[in-house]
Length: 353
Ligand code: PMP
Image 1: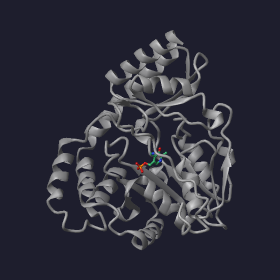
Image 2: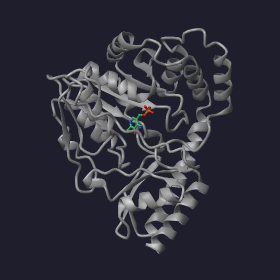
Image 3: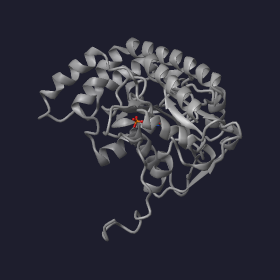
Image 4: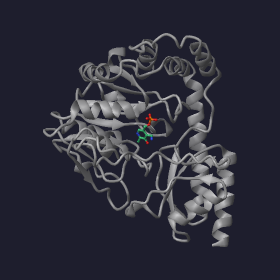
């Protein structure tokens, strides 16, 4: 750290992204990416726009917003698009949380929430999950704070029901409830259908997982039009061209090919069910995932040891050192071939152990 880093930020602990080692070719099951490439039209759109990089992108991302609006049954002024959903989460924290409306979120959840809270000097409360790793909706009912819930949650993969989400939103009319649906397309129910009923609900989604665009950085949020206007005030005060020309075009093309992506999600769900069954046969305890990853532990092997053994054999999964979850590994669901290789490798590791 330089001696110029400001007093107010020098204690900031940044987010740690999943590792991307370059020493060998790994089967990458550690950052919840899609194993499927983007559709052909997406590649063509990127190539086309790459010839126009001398021009700024559309600061309104009109075509992406209109297509999102059509697919999700809302108006385009209820949609904002951003540089990954991380960006809109940061904007939402900046816009809707402060000393008077502090944040509340689970103690085991997406690791960026406390980072954005600290970056923006917003006080926050972390509520423990129940013993079975589910979120206790009662902790958030009438919380009188800005609520952030990943649904399904990460890294557990467990979802709350739409009724529970609605009860949380309904009981906090003076605060914003942010529902982060990064993984919703893999079998959970979206709260988007509630945005016209509750003006305090903001639903955040991403193209990174179900739409195979993690490297392009495209996220969005849907809510009441005045919430979206507030988020645009933040966006135009930071970076109006937050979505680059190629990503904007890629997003619009991906939405035209929505069926391709939703079919891929069904394949991931099938591969997930297979993987869960195989892990259970090997004696693993696997949480009930509605995402493109599973969170699993075994009494037969230490969580970190399994992570390291898999890495030595060319398979990357995500291990967290936090004590309550350090026996688990978060394993992204890939292609059937990748999952077969994973199960074969874990079988060998357990035999040798
Ligand atoms: N929310 C959750 C729960 C996530 O796991 C992630 C991915 N790391 C994100 C949001 C952010 O995804 P992105 O910025 O790629 O849209």
